[in-house]
Length: 90
Image: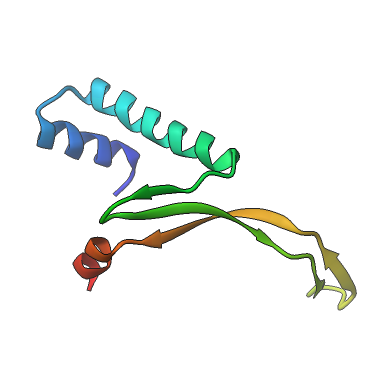
């Protein structure tokens, strides 16, 4: 399912226009993104939680040349599925 199909499904399920459903989805994604950029944890009970974690710097190897390179530390977004979502997927 892509974004357009998700918007259509939400609009049909709730009984609103696709335009309104699209704005709601964009707002939700934007709010989650802003929260994560501030380092906040976003928890949606039953669905899951979004968080930011730091990946340490490490050494790697260039597969083409075999040369050792340093991969810098970085922040990454994480998602952990909630119980209801995990059960639905099983």
